[in-house]
Structure formats: structure tokens, C-alpha cells
Image (cartoon, rainbow, N blue to C red; front, top):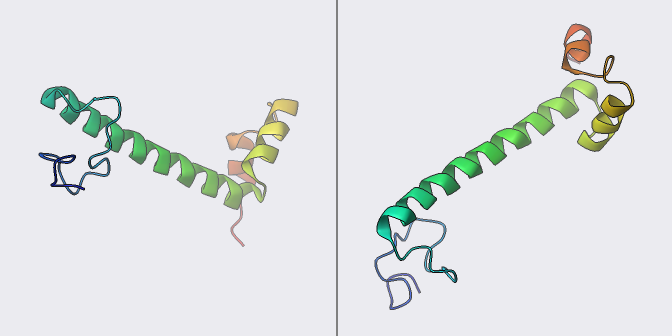
Amino acid sequence: VNGGPAGEGLDPLYPGEAFDPLGLADDPDTFAELKVKEIKNGRLAMFACLGFFVQAIVTGKGPIENLTDHLANPAENNAFAYATKFTPQ
């Protein structure tokens, strides 16, 4: 599809390819800005996943259980409390 009539002029390496049902790629300047925004949001999402992994390693619990523990007692269940008790195994 990319390079044919539906994907003419679009970058073959860009993840969006020719799928544009809302016509957001009609203006090249807006399309370039949206591509940058999508890349930045993807990087932010990957960084957030890294935070979940580190939190699970440090506390030994999942993110939902950590959230409920923190909401139950925010003064004792926070990052500073775990930073002083952390010993790698």
C-alpha cells in the first residue's frame, strides 16, 4: 500500500504509513508536527513502563497494589520510605 495511490508521498519508515482516516496528513507542516508528537509520546510511554519495572523490583509488588498501599497510608508508602530500605537481592 505504501508508495501506491493510497500511500503516495508518505515516509515508508514512519509507523503511520498510509492509514489516515481523519485526513490529518493533508497539511505537510501539521503532519510533520504530529509525527514528532507521536514519537515523543511513545518515548514517554516507554519511560513510564520503565518506572513500573523499577517500582516492581524495589517493592516486590505490582503497580496496582503499590497504588492501593500508597492511598491507604501516603506518609509511609512512598518513594522515600523505600529508598532508605532498599537492599538488592
